Amino acid sequence: MSPASRRPPARLSFLLLHGGPSGSRATGLSGPADQASAVARAYRAAAPWLSATWQFVGAALVGVLVGWGVDRWLGSTKGYGVVVGGLLGSTLGCVAFIRSAMKLLETKQ
Image (cartoon, rainbow, N blue to C red; front, side, top):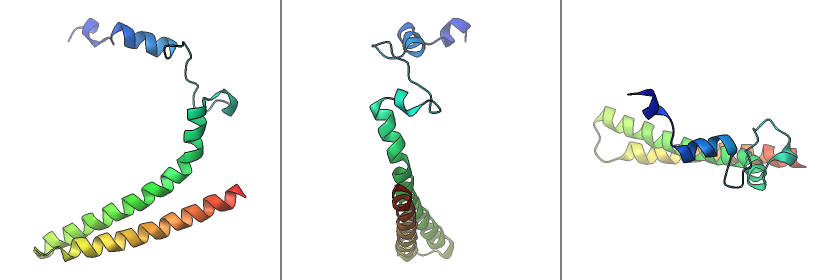
């Protein structure tokens, strides 16, 4: 592959150098909050809540996967391991979400 074929297209290079169509470059995450766009400030405010939500989803998925593994290991075709693992993972995920939410609500006050 020649060096010329590895270069980004001209339009992409312009966007990378000059930002969006309006010419504004995005500020880094370490920059002052007043310089960030409204969307960036909203994402920063939502990040802890999104993290708590992903804890719940992740725990449920891990529970299902562990249950599936137990079913395969035992040779079961009925799927009881998946059901029990999913319920256990969802329960633990719900507990983790509630703990995270309580911490987030305490820090807001």
